Length: 224
Length: 222
Image (tube, rainbow over all chains, first blue to last red; front, side, top):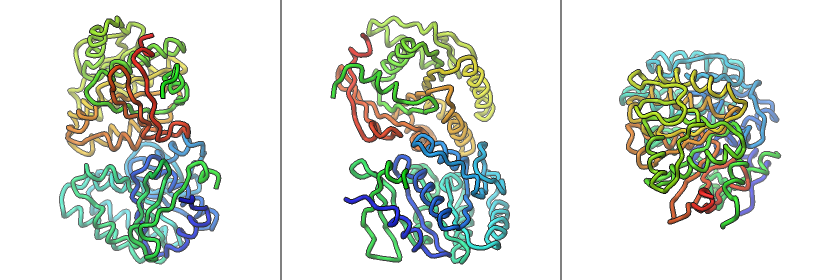
């Protein structure tokens, strides 16, 4: 298995159309940190602004994990919509309480998202969405969220990457993955194979890549 | 793979600021891990702070005696949460009759004060999985998880969370998946007669990633 190059990774990020959602299901150590790092780096190099949805300090965790891997990244040029949490990373433009009632949460989130996207094209990274779903108490709340996520689909100013931690899902009352896999145009898994991180597309617009394994060595990605 | 001082190498390689999850099943792994960490810290002149949740340290001290190891932990500072039997130098007591957000606030204050007294310390966390038995809803659960995240990267400590997997799994919300996500290093430890196999499920260090090493009881008792 030959490791994927920076060019392959960037082409994949480039080919995901605006208006679409890429779902990344991570079950690997440090996978979320590396994926976030690569997407932000890609966005910077191509001049597309980034805003991150940070649920319960997931961005701080990414930044700390990157530091352990030897990468200093403070995300200071990234706009952040912060849901709950206590550690501030990036340029925080809005704070939403994590335990707030779904309709109030969604209404405010919709307003701030419109405001951001009215300024033009953006890449959106969502970190810790499964933690937000863990707070939902019933089916009605669950479908309010799912409907809201569908509403965002198709917005030509937004290319979204939802990075979820797969290992947390079994402990959540309402599993969001089946609905998210339906909504997303592309679904990839991040896992470990033979000691190396691999990205495996499970659903894609380009069917020829489905099931293929794209390997990436941490030490090499860090030098991209 | 058996080398001289393999444990010493591992403990030196783990960095200050790291949170290390040690996963075990019912065994004497926690006893020997605490012993190994305490002795290592003494050799390195590092102070030890033990978070003793629900009298775990007493169990460990008593079980070590069964192996003929007298260890009273008198030079170890202990932050005691819940429980009744004091072992070591208890510097703070936190009651768990209050709601988690309240005692977490108190714990944070106690821990920050304890770490402040020393430039660098080894922190051993015992029985945290049992504390999760008192956690009923996601709000309380994530209050603890978020504060655990906050301690990650704090360079004044190298923290070892020793967790019994079987106990953790039976909590109302199993904390293991979130803990594995947060920690910088995750080591699965399995007892094999007089030795233990340490498997690095997660590590920032290239030399450990996905590797397994064997440590003998002798190495710790020496």
